[in-house]
Amino acid sequence: MLAVGPMNIRGALDVAERSGAEIVPEGSVPRRDVRVWRLMLDNPDHVAQGYDLKRPRLPTPQQVWSELWKTTGAMVERGRTWSKRSLIYHSWITLNSTLWGFLLGTSIGILGAIAITYSRVADMSVMPWAIISQTVPIVALAPMIIVLSNQVGIEERAVPKAIISAYLCYFPVLVGMVKGLRSPAPAQLDLLKTYNASGTQSFLKLRLPASVPFLFTSLKVGIAAALVGTIVGELPTGAISGLGARILIGDQFGNPFAIWSALFAAAILAGVMVTCLDVLQRVVLSRMGMRS
Amino acid sequence: MTSVISAQNLSLTFETNDGPVHALSEVTLDIAKGDFVSFIGPSGCGKTTFLRVMADLEQPTGGTVTVNGVSPGAARLARSYGYVFQAAGLYPWRTIAGNIRLPLEIMGYSRADQMQRVAKVLDLVDLNGFEKKFPWQLSGGMQQRASIARALAFDADILLMDEPFGALDEIVRDHLNEQLLQLWAKTQKTIAFVTHSIPEAVYLSTHIVVMSPRPGRVTDVITSPLPRERPLEIRDTPEFLSIAHRVREGLRAGHSYD
Image (tube, rainbow over all chains, first blue to last red; front, side, top):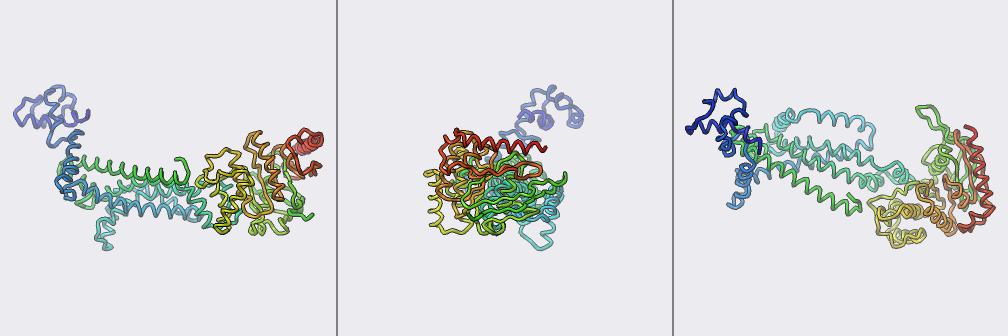
């Protein structure tokens, strides 16, 4: 809110000048060399205009909120929930990819963690690669994955998006699950040994239940990462639907409202997903008799 | 009497980065059926290691040991002993009954048999009515009783106990000691019991094995003249005090080596 004034002062002055107001200094080009604070001090009457621009550099929260409402609630009221201009539609596209990516990433993470826990070779070989995989910037990797999946003949846009999403999301799950599966104390494992329990039994009865609290913590991080992955995956695809595409289109067409409302929609989406997992965690852990 | 556990010149050396550690050295010992044998000694004297060797959790590097006449490995496969650890180690996600059922599930007992056995051992350790509680709802002493019940649930005739009451306070410990003696009288098990506490060892045992560290070896084996039925007050009798004195002498003698 406070940042809107200085951010939008230049735009506000240009608009005011065009409609005939006296501005110090004159002309938009000379104004480029003047600090925004100076401009605000010299033209105090026009600062307020910065809060009501058609194409602001930074929209006010009210503007974002009203845009968000216009593209969600208002469209529902008019029965156009699934219109291409509705953020609900775009959120759904993103959510869909995110959930597929989350499912894929979580499966990879859990299977990887099981391999690491039970095989020394996997422990020494998988983990370094998993860490390296996360140091590669996803924005560099995303276009490659999209081109590659196109090359192998996958027409569906959701597939590379889900892969990118899974790529970001498997790592926290892998790390959390390795920790979880290794959490039983040596005495616990000794106890099972005295029962002559099989590997499967000790996995199902000890390691797996012991890892559940760790799993949920990882899942919460993972699903947020999956959402970021999907949005990044939507940016370079030339995709026309999804929150990432909305951000890109808003950027290209100079429409900050579209960018900001998509950003808020993404944040709300992430919040909802993490909350769902949190509720699930409470239910599961209390059923397991554990206090979370 | 037949010997249930028999060790001949048993040695165990751990190879560590700082060189070999002689955890056990030339230990020879026989435990007869129905005995209650306590192992006492300072930290590092190998008493826990000896218990773990009997349980096939450690492999000796020298000598021989038999449990029920066979090797510890075979005894473990035959599920001939129950092991109680210092920490109760109950699974927090299982109820008390669920925890006691754990070995039974693993060993493949039928559902009906499981229920019956759980009820029986809960009764033995006096935890009736707690089967549906989760471990965190129980006190430390009750948790340890549940863990003893878990070790009793299947028909092992040997009970190996590694400082089961070490983390409990004196009053709870006295109470559990009394209960353990009753349990032992009722079940006729052979019990090997590791402890740090002289009164505990003397109160519980038919035989007290005094050990000393570096290298871990047996310095004295005391056969208790006390009767098998022992009220807590027996700890004030001259017989009790004289055994306690002998144990203390044995521990001191062991210590003079380092």
